[in-house]
Image 1: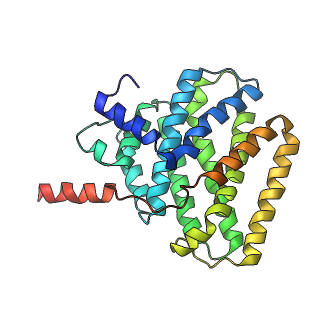
Image 2: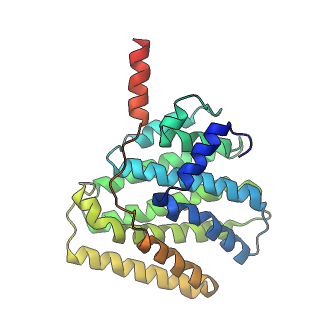
Image 3: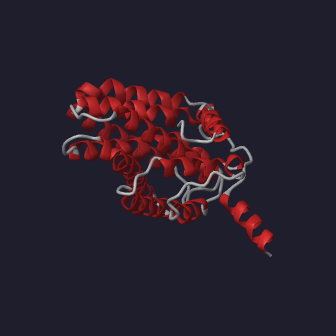
Length: 266
């Protein structure tokens, strides 16, 4: 991070220290442990930095979308079309803009086109998730969101990995899908109250969700018993994160920034 302007670097580290993103900040270390488990060599400094930037980005964007700013995803995609990072005076006024610019810094030219394509797919999956009218379609989209989120992180770190670690990618997608279902079990009631669901989940729906988590989680544990403790710790961290579902603090979004820009041009 030494390449960043001092004020931007401090803003980034302050954001990473925010307790509401604690769950996301812990993910990179777990992925590094999984890389070791599969016996894959990697540049740990590059891998860790890219994962840190990406999962903080995911945490901030997720918070923004959950606060009702669903259009944030589309605006971020438009903004990422510009490859060169821009650290102007507005970057410290918007958490979304800050993490987006940092993510640009951690994305090389070889990786960028595929990452953007996968991010578009992820945004479309989030839109479909919000439009789901049954627990079955909701679970399908949640799995898709989780798998794509994990796959994008693999795309980012692939250049820093040695060999042909496709097995790691498949593993990360499966774990991402299960993790997203665990998030849903924690957040479903809050999402319903906030009007983020296209249906009203009942007891049967919660039972179906829990069944999917236990079934898929057991399969992964039996297939990779050496990582069972890591899986359990990830779930415990998620459940204990008291900041999950808390109302978002007011912050500038891309929408307000675009309006300001339009007003200044006019």
